[in-house]
Image (cartoon, rainbow, N blue to C red; front, side, top):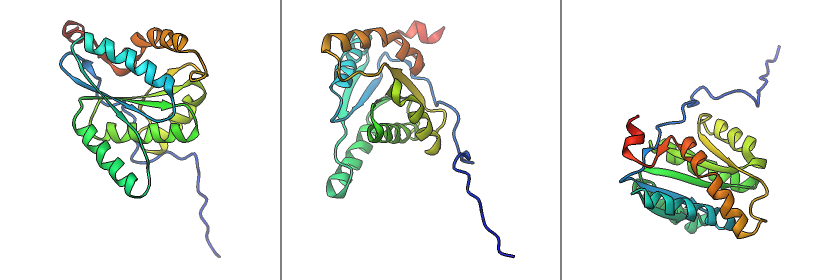
Amino acid sequence: MARGFVLDPTAKRADDITSPGPDAGSLVGKRVGFRLDRMWRAWDWISEGWAEKFREAGAEVVFWRSGGRSGDEGERHAADFEAFLNSIDVAVVGLANCGSCTGWTVRDAIQAANHGLPTTAIATKNFEVFAHEIAARGGRSGLRVHVLPYPLNEQRKEDVVQIGEAHFLPVLETMGASLTVAEAAE
């Protein structure tokens, strides 16, 4: 009698990490890295607003923009991203706002989390479930994902900036972050 195997596409990975990883803690004196992409101007606007608030609280902020993923450009991209991760204390990775962008956002967030960095992926509402699914399939089902409204990129800049403002305190909560040393000690 021949035997066959039935593969369950919903099975969980045996090596899955369900923990969200370390909290960001106090951002005072830390280097926070924002991973951007080429697609979503709304994410640029929101990350610029959040970065300004982080700087006001005493954090250093750097930005890194994702690029090509294949061939020689892909190899340079991978090396640059690795150097970026080695230069920061906290990673904020976005934007999961379409199928492939969600895949690359979560992939890069998993890489940051695997470096031991406090990491938060940023997704829009329509891609929230997909972001969590990809994180689980990547072995980090506990990955922190902060969700922004959808649609986002189609809105006017002033409206997107207001959304960023409204999500500033909630993203700090998602990150496990505080803006003062005293808040982190409580």
